[in-house]
Every structure is written in C-alpha cells, then in structure tokens.
Image (cartoon, rainbow, N blue to C red):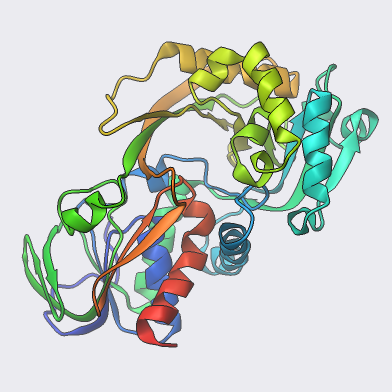
Length: 382
C-alpha cells in the first residue's frame, strides 16, 4: 500500500514511532494531536500481525477494573471520533453476552453493581428473545447487554487509519524498514538513519530486535489464538456476541466474587474448552460474514500449528450461545501476541526520550488509543 505521506526525506522529526500496528498508530495519532511531526517506521510492507488478526472489537465491558477499563473507555471514544473521519465503517455497536447458567447471572448482577456496569443492563430470557431473537437459544437464561463496544474490520481499518494519518496529518510512513538501534536523535535502520527527538517503540511480540534486555526483565510469553470466518448466517447481527465462558476470562468479570462458583461449574462441564483457552466472541462484517473465535495457547514461542480440537470447541460454543448452527468456515488463521501474568501493558523508559510500549493482554485495539494519549502526554510533558 502506498501512503500519501511516505518519503525518504532525512529531515528531523519530533517523534518516531517504531511499529505500525494499532498501538503504534494510537501513539502516532496522539502525537499529531499534540502538533508533533511524526514518522512511523515499520519492518513489514504493512501491518500484518496481531493488529489485523483479531476481531476489531473495541471491548470496554469486561476489561480489568481501574486503569485498563478507563483506557478502554477512552479508546472507544477516540475510535468513535476518528473512524468516520478516516472513512472506517463501524460495523455494529454494543455487546450481548448470553448467560446459560444461574452462576453466570450472579456474575452479571455483581458486574452491574459496580461502576463498570454504567449504562449496561441484564435481560431475562423473555427480554432477550424479544430484543435479540437472532441469538436467543432455548436454554439461555438471559443476557448482559452493554452499549459501549464498537466493531471495525481490523484488516481494513488499520490501513485506512494509516492512510488518513498520512493524508490529513502529514505522518511519514517508512514501510519495509527495520529499526536496528535507537539512540535519539539518531535511529539506525535497515535503510539508513532517521532523526527524531523522541521515540516510541511498539514491538508487539518482537522481543529481540530493540531493547531485548528490558523486555526480558518482564518475563513475557506469547499467546497463539485461533480465529475463524464463517459464511453469512443470512441475518444481520445485532451487536458483538459473547458467552458465559467470557465471564471467567475477562477480569472485569472474573475478579468479582461470584465468578469463583461459575469457574467451578465450567471446569466440571466444559474442561476441554477451558484447557484450550476457548471463549466466544462473534462479530459481523458488512458482507454478512462472521468473525468468530477464539482459543489461547501459551509458550515462549508457540508452534504455528493450531489444534483442530480448539476450532471444534469454538464452533460448539457458538452454537450453544446463539442457538444457531455454525455456517460453513470460509477462512481460518492464527495470531500471536505478547502476554504477562503480572500486567496488562508495560511502558518502560530505556532512556529519557524513549518509551517502550507493549500491550501484554491482547487488548491493543481496545486500549491502544487511550494508552497512546497517556504515553505521549508523559513523554512530552503535556
């Protein structure tokens, strides 16, 4: 893809961002809003990693209580503001989390009693069938409904966002160029030098090219997830859909005291799903196809071979949660992102004018814009 802002001008920039994934672009966006002259350096021809291999689901409800939840709220607002300006369609809004067990209802009720439940609601079985008949399985007890989420098509939204930053905000993109050493104002790359007063490094799961010692200190691992695209079910999806498996995975729910009883029941009833890290998210594209996932397998370097069992479990949960037979699979893929048991993201300071930023919880699309604002404000003293 050719960006209208691309050049090889060696002139000096206020800020260089290493990495053109959603976290890097979130920092570039925050920087241009501060009036900074920005260059983005990306080793691939285009964003090709975790940022485009996900749901494009900007998730607020369920994010860990406190700072991460607030970052998600702020990121959602920025997405809502920027998407129409950049020509990025919002495919649908909101979340319907279907509940099949009394323990799940108890978790939803506890969630609604917190500040995170603002503007959310709990529907009973009849209310769910009345408002969302597309996804009302016979055994569903109800649903937790949130209005906060947005859904974009990541594979399209990322290049559209980059093109808009180049066209409207004069961000320079240097693609297929690897940053090899960062020592402001000099950044040595595979194609020469770039001059920038400050640098943000957003390496995703590249733990070895830049600042490997700093990254190693955090003990990060990698998570491989399995994703599916299903043919159109012949109806329009009302919102993003999740199931009660998500209540023991997303810490905004799982940290609540009633989640312990739900976890025990799920361990007895769906042990293979939990062993494969399966929970359900299903979202819809403008052409009607569904993006459905996912599973989670952890290692220092996960093998690229996704187990067929995980795919079968995802489709099984789709049918249980929605009452719909899964449409045919038309595409499948895997993604890899960094993970940490101790933190949802890290912002390290290798030097006074450099920040190393890694989202270590798979929430880059949901929190990256808010995190970019906070990091730029701290780095630039604004």
